[in-house]
Length: 469
Image (cartoon, rainbow, N blue to C red; front, side):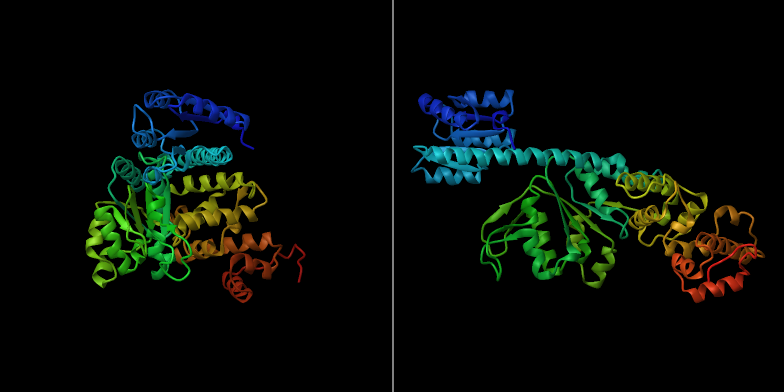
């Protein structure tokens, strides 16, 4: 439970007896309240320390309470503010709430209401501090140097992210599925001046045409059937931070027109609403489609393409950056082992050759899945070929290791391929004690196919061992 005495509450109140009474009542309930009597003292206190909660009387002799509220929101924007005003000053209350106040109290104060309001504000402040801590941890996880790979193409990606982080322009990230576009987007956000603000993501491909506008822009109560309350959209949630629009190539044309207007005007209306909302959001888009081809096909607006691609980051597929494979494998070995899945610390040369020879249609995401699977199957300290997924075994059986190809000629290429395939099958047969059914399952083929391969490659059971039938 939160220690209330450690939460600092700053209250500006020009009426000294009222200030002392509030301080006494609050301290009885366990709150630590500091009272100042002028707007000047209030601003000086904000400059020397960072209170957890602010209480602000809007009627001060030396300052406009709404101006003080605006200055407080600029200096410590996430700190809850409770405004105190005369009971008939409704307009001031509305302006204060629009200006960022989280609650209000009317004079003369109801002291039970005061304690409830302070309790809610302290809880909100604690949650905000925890959220800031978590964002800091996430920011460490998505640091620029955590974009792995020493290949030239990945070095260029890191340079582009670093360049883009210094600006607020919209960015388009191109790349196949599984290449890590979201990782790049997060690295861009946390390397920018917006790192302390929200990173909000939307998968445009996962939302229907009827839902995506409500998801992006929010809706008013009663805007459509089922809209039982006002809902803030992703743009509002991302205010001050970054909005990541994943798979923007799948956004419906009707929504594209509204998105273009938002990017141009930086304002929008909720679905069913009339109020124009202004947001400060950095938009980051990603797609696995060729948007120019989509424009030609009539499924993507040319004017929107021009609006979202002032800066384009191309993320290469894994098959084009095979030099990065060992570093990626070691990273996934380390992170997955720390999560309690397996104890293997390395990959055998044969297994690494198999990984290098695979085409990786699922890119880095497929590699991560392959290492996690291998760790679950491996009981030793080194991952072997037999622990890899069947798809990798099948592709590696068709492509021998580069070291083998150095000695292969056009005459013996078929023989080299057969030898490589034979070694994989024999290894798995030995591991399964020559049980053909289990071996076929491990290799991802039927038992009939395994028997055919054994006959074709001349694989026979050694006569010196006893086998199960």
